[in-house]
Length: 161
Image (cartoon, rainbow, N blue to C red; front, side):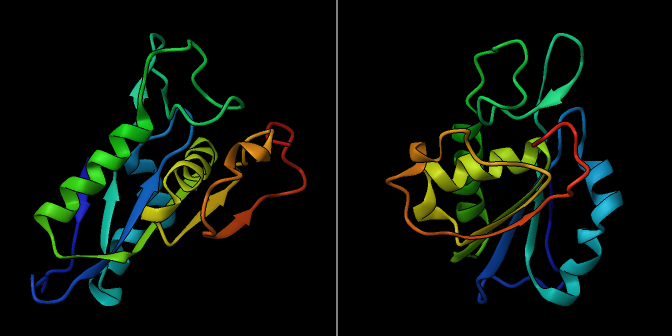
């Protein structure tokens, strides 16, 4: 996992957090090469976290998100617990603005962002999903508090519909 924070970080000023989740078979390096979020940390003053998903027996990285994607081998993986523990650790080690915690996910990472918003809406302010989707049955999240969401998805995507 990579944690990137402003070079002038001070405990006196709580900072927003962005947790960026890669897609199926992806990794944090690919994600930052594509989004270049680490280059914005000093200017925009936020803490950026790139966690790494689990590897299956074929070496493919994934998040255990929704039934739609991507725990193909049904491994016992608690990614919700992992990401909430990660957030707890960040809040202990850094001065975090707990009202400004955001997730951004690509594909399988977008699915995982939906799951986090569904199960822990009280802990996040917003999320962005690029080519990810919610649960097939949106009623699963009926008890979640409102969370800001930006969903970006192309009409030519033949994999995630």
